[in-house]
Image (cartoon, rainbow over all chains, first blue to last red; front, top):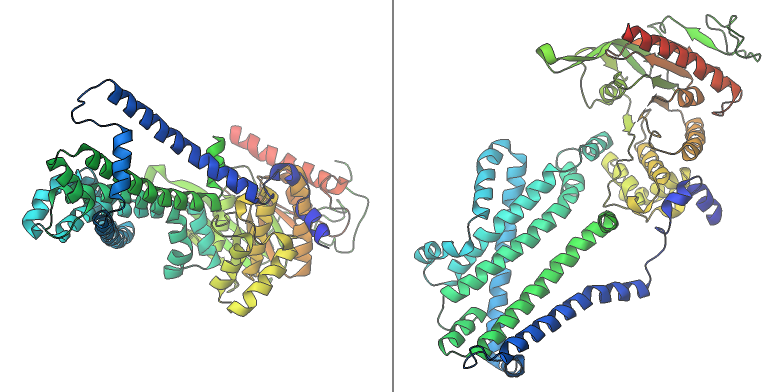
Length: 291
Length: 281
């Protein structure tokens, strides 16, 4: 019965067209793709370590510049102190708060601007304008408004990230294929249901891309903020970096840089895999790879 | 002109039946009083305004009986798709009246227009949900519909994992799920290879035989029209106007390579050529 149905289903030239598309993804393929994603990163780390060691070997600024053999043990040591983890915790909490706020504001803003033409004309240009502002220039403004407080940092993060998120959503809504809209309307999808079942899911790839870009802006804003807005009793990553600079502690400052890099890469990986998952589900990934 | 077909069936009783047994050419329109599933009365559609205005349809009158399969054929730009959009209610005519007698109308396109983020089954299920079918019944109905188009085992596949023909079948299942009385098809098999198209013709024929559905099928493929239609309506180009109607005899061999279909197709092609040369003059 099932083979009968299958024969009927993929009869004709369909057989040729389908190729191996109906093959399931085995565990072997998953391991292979995980390795494919990992080795370029390992290679990058190796290249950086080699170049770094070469610069140290030339003896350039040898009174401050230390090689990986000094910095990596310092990093290891720092990772066993409570202070570092407290700082990482505070930084990550701010990241979550600022980004979460930007996500809510950007999404609400994007949803309204996408659907209300008068808002589109005015607010749309403001959103684009905000995107070209480097986040650091907002800090004097934010510090005047909020003082040296966490809200000042969150304010700048939101200003950086929300426009990207809003723009992503607007782009997604704009590029909902007209044919799908027609199909949805013939099906009887109207008003809220048209949004819920058609326009929002159709916007998802652009929205996720906007979220990813928004995170990059938010993280930059956060790091700049932590270097400028030093709050007593709140040892953040930025504060540690600042302190080690004051102490001319090269190995410590470099260790913090490595930690910032690791946090950035880790979060970026989450967004990249979300982005890929969305694309894979829609069959956009294979097409992209073939091209 | 040679005799088209030696076989004559009792249903051939229209004007012209004696001259062409097996093929009836009807020049005059179906009488207004006949019960119709879809009735277009002097429908015109103008796009744009002023000097750039384009007359897409010019006083098209057409009456489709319940359960009838009508093919609309014409060169590109003859307003075939416009006609379907108007009947589907996606657009409104500039003048004239369209009456679908309060029936449910659904539309199928040349592209499957499936939602790429949903599986085949979920695509069908969404149409059921939009129609307000209770959740408990949706699953079984979806499975039944997919089996109707021979895709019972492919419900969990996403559109991009299916072939062009399979996608168009899912689109057909989705159209059927809307439980419409009138199915409008806008060159639904135009993008498929000949073999797949042939199979889908058979499937469409079987599905139509299983239920009473009025079908308006737009195509630019003369043989496809002769193969599928109970009646074929020829539209002229720019502006679209009904220039001829052909009644296709029921019964007999309706395969696309059969003599009946080939000869009817040849007659229609001749008429279309004549229409085109009129444009050149």
